[in-house]
Length: 517
Image (cartoon, rainbow, N blue to C red; front, side, top):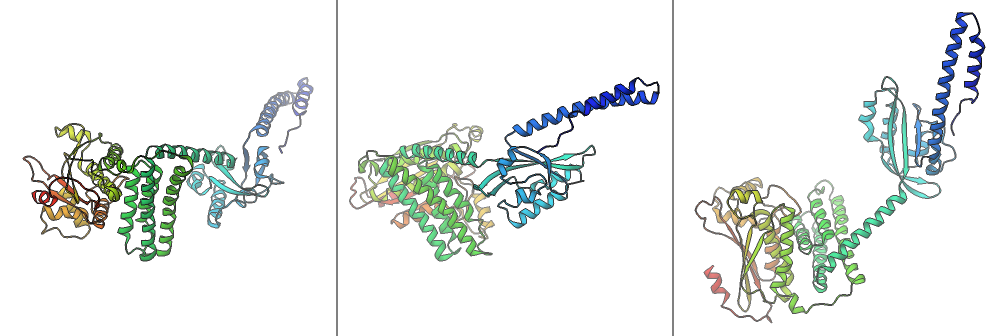
């Protein structure tokens, strides 16, 4: 594996130096001193060689050096033979023992070989400039164990002029370590999922998972049948799935839906519609997998008592759900926890419209947090309390429920809304303020400066309105009169919800209430 200098060399040098030291010839005496110095150097070199050999024998990594011909030199670690399982290492080329059996594409392999070849005899900075072409992690076809996962480090060995004369390669087999890490990550995710499932009442979680599953399947059907013709509808379904998941703190489902929503806008619909559809199916498969994982935890790990249906279907239960989601949205935005003040009877049963009301309120309250309420520093500068305030007024008659949402935030930024519309080619020259506000329901129009997991795509309000209208309800916004000193008008969001026919409640006729509003 490694070459060794003859052990007797220092002794022979010393003996020759001793023989010459007795000579009266000055030249021979000088030669004797030089031989003595050479003996010392030889001893030091042999000591270093022994140390290097011991290190190469003991280190549990594959180390070797390749020369300008791309071949492995005589010095390599013993562990390399266990990693690569090849009969001959010394003198083999880097392509034969490492890059050839690697699961690399032809271009990737050719680029790596070219980067190595042009490095020799050149300054080290040239090696560093091309280092990105060298694979750092490869799937390697082991003739005995199948595919192995190898991590590879490449380091230039310079001479005294900083020119590359060799390349040190370090190979680590991380197959088992990576598998262990993945099992640990999967177990951690499962434990997190278990905690999230336990935090949601069993029947409610069943209903939520059924709803989001249906929405994902609807998004996939829209793409399969219409391609990119109804992308806003697809956006809407995925956006609603994300909102529902966040509302119930189903983090893995939320993240998968967010990734699918983000991917949708980057797909090459015009250049390669088949590829775009295939990639969308892949990312929505991840969403469906997340739903299935929650369903599995719900079905196989838990056996929980179920609360009475009437307790789960009230407006009060919906508010408990959306309140926690609203707090989480504020935290993600770096805003203080808002205060939700409810006025009116929340004991009204929602029955079959429970899911739609929950989804719509989630969108509306998220909108208040994302676009209405300010950061703590902004509220302090405006002389407002640190915690924003969201008000919910509840009114009902025997057939309908009216919910009105306002907040004490900065108001509706009509200038930003006008710019957003102009940016989409919609003329606003003849629009009054109420016309502008109505465009909050135009898909893709938003006053947000950027997009995040909470808001910013201009989809949520449109989705909430459509969901209520499918039930025979509605969603609209009204601008309140500006108070003295208010640069922006305040926004009132109204949700009209039809109650199931068997839900009987007291109170005045809602038509008169709407007229009063």
